[in-house]
Structure formats: C-alpha cells, structure tokens
Image (tube, rainbow, N blue to C red; front, top):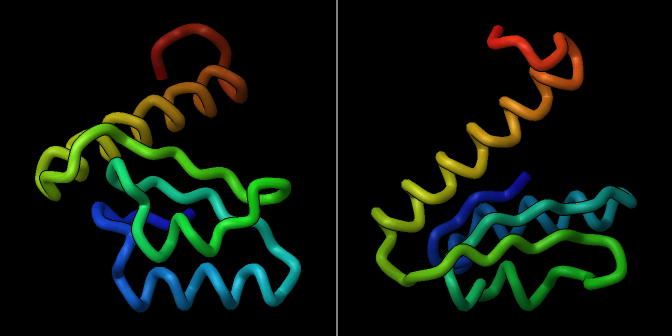
Length: 84
C-alpha cells in the first residue's frame, strides 16, 4: 500500500519498485495525476486509485476516507454486518 498525494515522494516510489522487484503487487492511492508513482505502476498487476484533486491536504483527507472504508469492509467480512 503506497500513499502519496503527489505521487512524487521518492521514498514511496522506491518502496514500490522494491515490492515489484520482489514479485509483489502495489496498491497506490495518489492525487489526480499520480506522478512518478503512477508512471511506474504495472496496469496488469498493480492497482492505482487516483483521488481527484491536487491539493495535498484534500488528497490526504480522501485517502483517510478510502482507508476507513476499506477497514469497514474488512470488519464486515470478518465480523459480520454489525458494527464492531
């Protein structure tokens, strides 16, 4: 899981390259354009969720929302439809 508002964070792009080199897949949440991180993703293996906007604070808020929704889905899968 790689989070970068601009997609240009060097350390995040490097971590994605290491994961790909180890045969892993990358799930990236970036801002609108995706930057360097978006360009290095492999469409056939990796997943790129491009959140609308280029304002870093707004993209971070959207990333938190997406991650909270994912956590809710995981909770529901493991524990049922009731609130946990």
